[in-house]
Image (tube, rainbow, N blue to C red; front, side, top):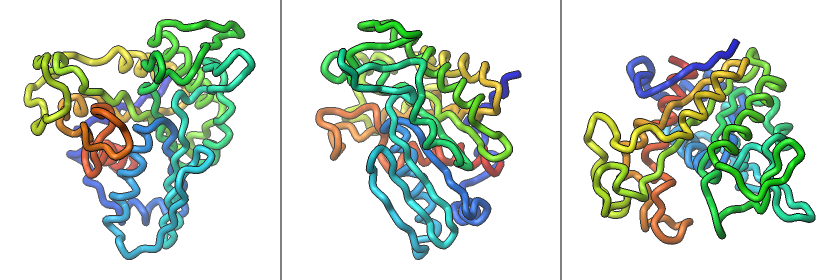
Length: 282
């Protein structure tokens, strides 16, 4: 029987973030974010939020190397790790080119033994042309030049769900899925067709977002409902859709052009971590 737990902004009513409490209660624990640059966004946010509570505490930082980065709060033995993977499933270089394998997860060995796992993927599934990092998709032993991206996402995420069922011990490890982080490149999504996130200074103030819930959100919920082990969904989508002003825009130091997909720090990912804290301690 599937065990999906949903955490939204309502969690705030029960539990306000307290970094010292988190470090004390999770002394000696390992927390790993697994995913793309939006996982990195949330990982950076959480490490900064914790440090702000214990600014004089000793810590060590290992920058991203071979796909893994970490911050350790040495006085508490708490390690916050980042495992960078754009798709969760494997992306391999082979004779035919770069192959995205929808039914293979070899990198999962690095995820084992954690006390908390927070997964994320979707951002790169929509990339095409020169920004697409694969040449072929492999599914069931067959190679495809392309396929419907939502179908591919469903297949890849289903493979991840099977990995969770086979490898996670719920008495040891809590599993979270970050949810779908929205983008704000097209103002038509909030009824202002000539706009993007560039120059926005206010959130969307309506009670419901005009573009509606993205189809990827539907896929995530469908897959999670079929995972047998407990998985906690940090349902960040709706609250994040309202934050069209919260992106780096043209001021990102890491991305050329206008960045309406990642988020400023301090900023919205802090709210995601409020949800995470509420799910852990609420």
